[in-house]
Image 1 (tube, rainbow, N blue to C red):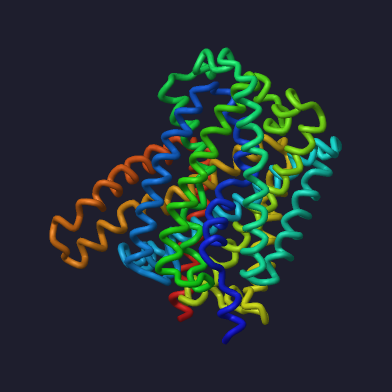
Image 2: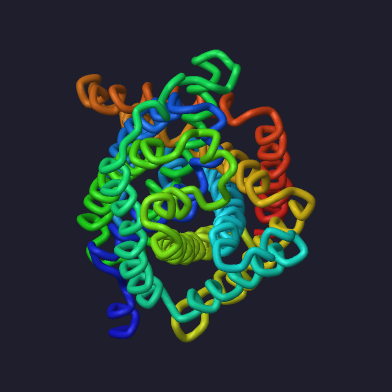
Length: 431
């Protein structure tokens, strides 16, 4: 009993889980995807960041209402019933698998700074899978070790972004910001796409709510970690993006496989470039570590609720669902292989947009969850005020973002989500 208690993570590790899952290799690769739109993408950062805080507030209130519960699944189940709860969390699990595949690709992309032959997909794909397997091995040693690893890498990953901010504002070139929109699309279309892309970098808002049974004092720790982690992340994102654009022109960023490393290299030379690349790789590894934890916690919780096979809830002596870890690692590897024909940046963009779509389905229902819960509990109208002020804007935002991810990612996401229906029917008949 004491071993299980000592294996739980505390506030600083919970905050690092939120920050670590948001600040990953994604922020280091996103400028390449955003550069084709120009500096108008900064507006996308502001919009997605503000809405991330709104959604974080919703998660905070729900975690206070249901302390110690398994996050998104429980919240949506209470509001809309078991099937919707399963459908939403299934989509969220798929999004995590896609995130982890994209993170492995991003780690590989920054590794090209040191190993140019990784630009060849026949080498980069196996290398990406190797990275996924190594992180799976780390996660096999239990949540406490994952938390410590996440805490250390969260500190290290912020350093290259802060260096870019300092260097960027020393050599700031305002000409790089004009014209605002270089995409050829309307401003509204450009802001829609860039908001959808940047919102990917905020996926992980809910990270502290999922491993609830692995957190000390979850009723106090989870709300604090969610808000603190999201706020810190928003500030770092906006400052580092503006600084990067102050150093490099969008056309230079668009042709870079490691934009933050290249930007620093322009000022500090190859030594600075290599240092940033190392930190970016560490950042990606830390982020992949945190998402791998959620990758196995979600199916474990579903298995406990008899909505997935018991194979996902079988744990080892460290309370790690090791069979679920093996299965999900294989699935992430398959996702990387499926995209074998694309280059690194195109694989990354496709994966993050599809992942964002699947997560937006979760946020779509979460934005309404609190309102539905209050309605079902027949609370007086005055109790709805704060829920409506956050729930309605979050609902409108998620609908807008679902449109913004694009047709290809929507179709791919719907196909992946549809697998939940036969699985749910099978599990209910089995039980």
